[in-house]
Amino acid sequence: MTQPPRKPPLLPQEIPPPPPRRFWSRLWRPVMSVFGLLWLVAAIALLVLVQSGVIGITTPANATQTAAAFGATVDAINQTAIALGDREFQIENTSAALDAQNFLIDQRETESARNFSATETRSAVVNAQQATAAALDFQGTQIAFAQEATRIELNYRGTQAALNQNATAAALGFATQAQPAPEDDISPTPTDDRRPLFAENFAGGISGATWRPGSADDWLLGDGAISARRDGAWLLTQVNTLTDYTLQLDMRPVADTGADYFVAVNAPMAGDGFVLRLTYNGTRISAAGLYEVNTASWLAGDSQLGRALTAVQLPDSPPTAFFPLVVTVRGTTFTATLDDDFTLLNATLDAPLSAGAVGVRVPQGTTLSRVTVTTD
Image (cartoon, rainbow, N blue to C red; front, side, top):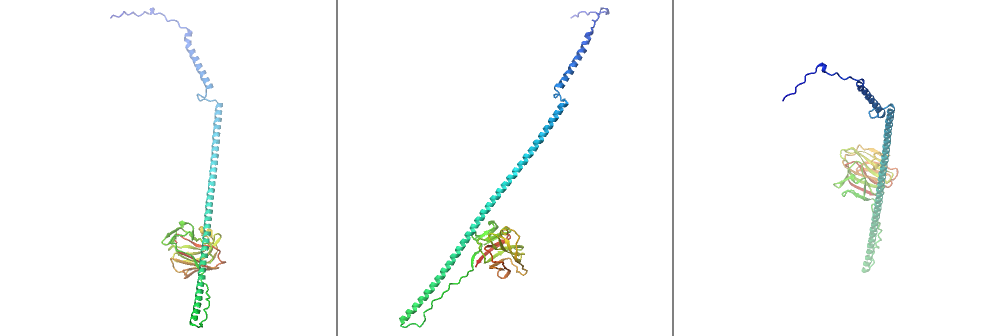
């Protein structure tokens, strides 16, 4: 393939001259640049004035308003916190009032239960007293019947002897020289007014008709005796009309342990009574005293004793691991002995005892095996 022939370069005189340049053709570009810059500045200024919040620029007035709004919000939050605190305080007061009301209701229920129990106990005591009185009256009536029957039997025998004597004289044809048998002057068979009210050996446990325990759980039955399961366990007779009596009590103290053992000499239904305190040093009774106490407080475990009628030290008491106590009350005379051999205490009362029950209050581990009460 052949190339076209190249043109030879133009000679200087053959080059055409450039076209002439005009003034305005050189000026329009700077002018347009200036106008564009002015429009950009105007747009930015308008944006700042109208939508300053968009780009994060605020005027002092807006800043003041914003700070005021923030302050109002903080105050509102504080007021809300105070209101919530007041509400919580009111709720706590209401809860405390409800707790106090519930406690009052519990107290009333407890008091009602105690009153009901006391009423039942009093009714049981009255029934036991009436039953005892009826039994004693029946026993006295039977004794009177037996005495009268004995007297009639003896009179009949005397009458029969006299009739037989007269019949014998008539049969023999002569009158007997013997004087008629005098009518027997038979006096009633003497009786012992001091009869046992009861003799308890606890073989079958604690009889509710005879005894009033502080609690059924306070005593444990074993080997024909009862043992105290706690300190201050007490036991009183249901009969509370005792004045003159003899109390025989077989009691085994806690070995090798010093403690006080109490015998209720006179425990009325209300008011003050008397107790015998025996101080045991672990081997023997070292002291004894008769004290006046408030019965209800004493049964509740109060260790505070009242006036001492008499109190003695017993340095010569025999060593013993068993208390066969005998307590006797006759009028104003009080005596306590150990197995009728060693006198623990003699006292003279201010006046005869009022009607009341008898019993014991002992430490844990004490054993009772026999109690006998004899009345006059």
